[in-house]
Amino acid sequence: MISSSLPREDGCIVDHIYKYQGFWYMEGYLDGLLAFQKQFKANDTDILLASTPKSGTTWLIALAFAIINRQRYCFTTSEDNQKHPLLTKSPHELVPVLEDVYALVKDDHDQCQGTDLVTTASNPDGKDHFERRMFVTHLPYTALPESIKDVESSKCKIIYVCRDPKDNLISLWHFINRLRPNRNLEPISLEVLFERYCKGIVTYGPIWDHVLGYWKQSLERPEKVCFMKYEEMKREPKFHLRKLAEFMGHPFSMEEEKRGVVDDIVRLCSFDNLNELNKQGEVVRLLSFENMNKTRKNLLSINKNSWFRRGQVGDYANYLTPEMIECLDKITEEKLHGSGLQL
Ligand SMILES: Nc1ncnc2c1ncn2[C@@H]1O[C@H](COP(=O)(O)OS(=O)(=O)O)[C@@H](OP(=O)(O)O)[C@H]1O
Image (cartoon, rainbow, N blue to C red; front, side):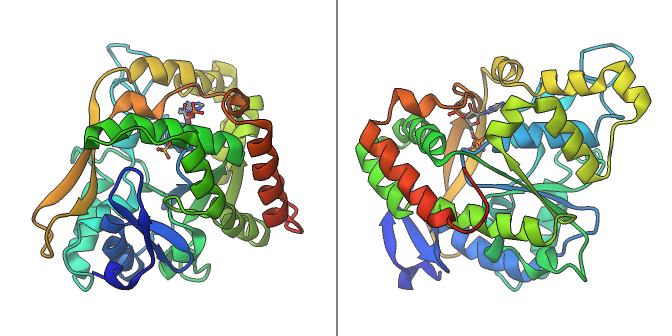
């Protein structure tokens, strides 16, 4: 385990998080990260959906899944079409998180195991579920394997979504407090999380560095990295759906436009619809291992409805004091200064 030599802080929903190469990670994912960096072989057709937690990941997964699989599934339940997986499954059950997958690799030299796990994870029910391999990650750009980043060897595409840090913090705070009771922990106060967030000490933080990593790549290689903002997606969902489809190489045809496919996908993936569809059920996630040979897992059950709360822009105003708002805006301004990016 590499964690023993790294800076360590309280993890909010895990015992500890560790700072590695500038970012904070949950323990269970650290060894997985090394295996992932060494072993992952990207295919040219792969799509990687990237974000910091609580920035619109769930929405992005649903939209991207609906785009690439739209010939295969219809959007409403009808007898002559296969039922759309989003009508019965959480978006998080349809697209694997790469850190989750690689955390299960027992030995970071065991190439076969990593490859097998990725193949299984991208085809969950063994029925050739996906049109293309698609993965989710919260890893910062710098931590991605060369096989994904290298333009010469891989044409795989990355779609990144980010969000106003103020709403991101509030969303994170609610999410953490929904999960803490599952681990017999008291709720964490907004004041405490605010302090940590500003210092960058949250899982995958500092979020500004995370966002900037992908932003710079999207400027340098727009054909490889598509940079999206939650707020802009909320404002113009159809425009951004078309942009996504175009970027992924699956643009909507005139005929599809006429048939209202764009509207159908926006509706299927809307907050209200997914929120209604995901009222019940759980998804189990790995938190860490209890022993060195990774046979005893420390798991966390996440209610599917934990990924849906309000889905609005500006909800932070209901929670943050004017001083907190000013402080966060100042950090954001300083961090992003000169980058051309505004959040
Ligand atoms: N379909 C759709 N449309 C718009 N907004 C949505 C959607 N699905 C989830 N959400 C809102 O996104 C927030 C959760 O962020 P993530 O999906 O990134 O969470 S996670 O990282 O996957 O755990 C969380 O935001 P808040 O409501 O502000 O907490 C969710 O409500």
